[in-house]
View 1 (cartoon, helix red, strand yellow):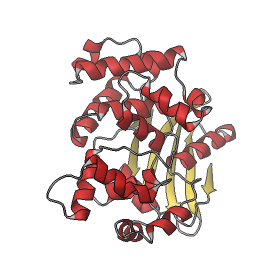
View 2 (tube, one colour; view 1 turned 120 degrees about the vertical axis):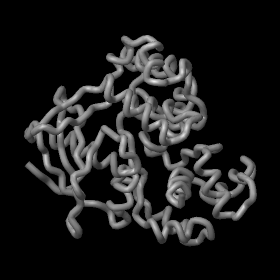
View 3 (cartoon, one colour; view 1 turned 45 degrees about the vertical axis):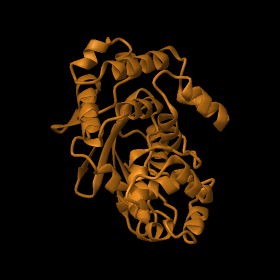
Length: 292
């Protein structure tokens, strides 16, 4: 069973999947040539599907298992969110075409979109894992976390992983994560997050119903979630175009290179630069990251 999802004109599949290929330790999706394979939870099922890009047509999705028509809408919704297909980027590219820093990046990476994390629990845990460590080690910790606690689906000899469910992680103790080289503080934060999700205190549906300002306040009220993490989640999960991870090391490095500075830019300098990107801070950040 397969179907085609049309894509907007400002969309480049190659740029988007380059983000998904960035770590060989990634377990939550796999590539077979140009085909991307992933399993998600939908309506009580573990649904395995593949996506590939067909020039002139769009993204082709093949339902691998279970092949049920009732699950097509869930998979389509996930893919649309995953590849940011419903955001109209024409105003962003119009703005970028007039900006000396963004113009060459927007031209070089035209159609690159925010590859999302539709699952809020996964998004928050990944953001916590990445706090104050390099990206390589963050991927190592995520790999161990998924291998130890995630559900596995084996089809035709291949194993596919789902991100651990909150109810599973809620039963752990910090020592269970310390053995995987998580810090004690991150272990407590992640288990606390899981317990909040498992109890229903936090859910994507609850946050989705809030206004952006209230959503930010709610995220910041969660133990272990600071401004950078909250903005990252607003960017990757809620598609908030004004999300601005001020202080991000990658953003500072990109601006330092582009501005040819002999030091990292100050917060005031970064804020001054971003004044001209108001309303599109998340996408400006994305393209600065891409420059690295």
